[in-house]
Length: 89
Image (cartoon, rainbow, N blue to C red; front, side):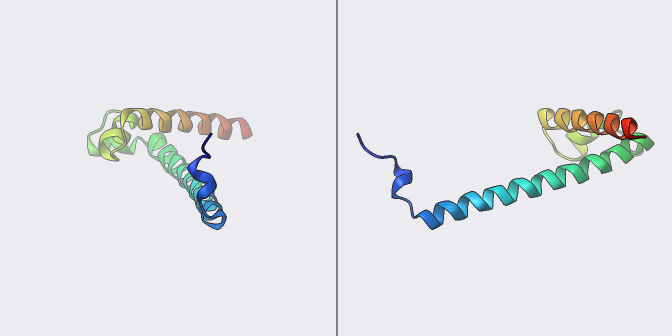
């Protein structure tokens, strides 16, 4: 049975790739948190209506360029964030 190609890769290269992906994931999580906080302010003040959008999801999808699934995920994260903030008060 042949070994997978991974075993032929340099160990330092593999570790570097895995470390970089881990750091990128942490950056994405931080940026998502910041975006959700900004969207919370936009939703609370309904600022998206000034640009002609009827909903936050529409603003995420058409104004920010996210696809439908990403817009829905952001809106769900926003609702969870709002619940957590309200629970803490």
